[in-house]
Amino acid sequence: MAGFRKAKAEQAALKMGVYGPPGSGKTFTSLLLAEGLGKVSGKRVAYVDTERGTDFYCKAVPGRTVHPEAFDFDALYTRSLTEVLSSIKALKPEEYGVIVLDSITHLWEAAIAAYGGNQTRAGTIPMHAWGKIKKPYKDLMAYLLSSPMHVIICGRQGTEYATNEETEELKAVGVKMKAEGETAYEPHILLRMEALKPKKSGEVAVIVAYAEKDRTGVLAGRTFLNPNFDSLCKPLLGLLGGTQAHMAGSDETAAQDAEQIAADDQKRAEVSAALLREWSARISLAKDASELKKLGKDITPQLKAQMTVVDVAALRDAYQTREKEVPATVAQPTEVAA
Image (cartoon, rainbow, N blue to C red; front, side, top):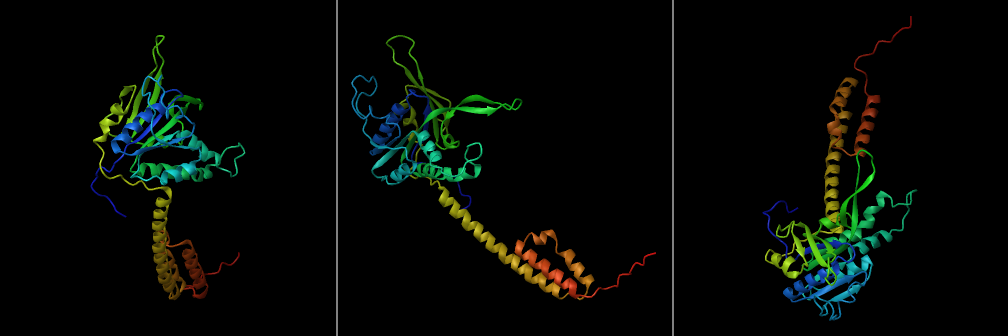
C-alpha cells in the first residue's frame, strides 16, 4: 500500500454533470461546452446519444439564433450500457479529447432492465442483487473519472423525496439528477439547467445554468444566463494539470482488497496453528485435574479470538480428551442420602 503522501492536484480534464427537465438546454449547452473543449485540445468529441437528441445539431440550421452552424462530433447511438463502456474504452486519447454521455438516465435504466434474477413478493429487486446491477455502471463511472479526456454527463431531472419523521409519508423536497443515487456526487462540477419562458411575444427563452456543485470554487453558487464555453469552462482550464488521477474500478479495488484479506487470513491461520500446537502440548503435559483446570482458565476469550474456529474446536477436543485421562487431585466426597 502506498500510504499517505503530500497532496497534489492530479486533474488534467474537466468532469461535469448537467441535468434538467426536457427543453432546458442540456444537449445544446453540452455541445457548446464540448466544442470549446475540443478546440482547445485540438481533438475530436465523442458523443453518446441515447435519444437521438443531436440529430438537428449535426447539421446547419440557419434559423437557429445561437450557433446556426453544424456541430462537428462523432456519435454513438445506443442505450446499451455494455456497448457504451466498450466503445468508450476503445477511444484513443490522442484522437479524442471530450466524451459526452446524453443521457446517463437511460444507461442507469438499462442497468436495471438487464437484471433477470428473482424478485421479491412485492415485485421489486432484492437488496442483495443491487451490487451486481450497479457493477457495470460503477465501472463506467470509474473509467470516465480516470480518463484523460474531458467528460460531460447529461441526465434527466427527477424528484427527490424524503420521509416525514412524524407521519412517515414521502414528501417531495427538491430535484436531482435521475440516475444511480451517487452519480451526481462524482463529477467536479454539477449544473442544473432551466429554460425561462419569454415574457413577451417574439422573445426567445433564456437558458439558465445553476452551479449546484463546483470543487474548484470558481463557479460555486453562481447562476449563468445562456451558458457557454467561455463562461463555464474557460475559467477552469488554468486549474488543470498534465496528469489525470486514476480512479480504481470495482474489479481493481475488489482484487486489491481480496489480496489483502487473503494475506490477513493466512497470517491469522499461522498464528492460530502456532497457538493450537503450544496449548495442545501444555494440555497433554497436565498431570492432574487441578493443573488442567488452571490451564483451562488461561485459555481466555482473548486468546481464542486469535484462533480460527476450527482450531478453537480442536483445542477444546484436546482439553476434553485430557480431562478424561488425568486423575483427580482430591477425591470428591460422596453425599449420602438421609
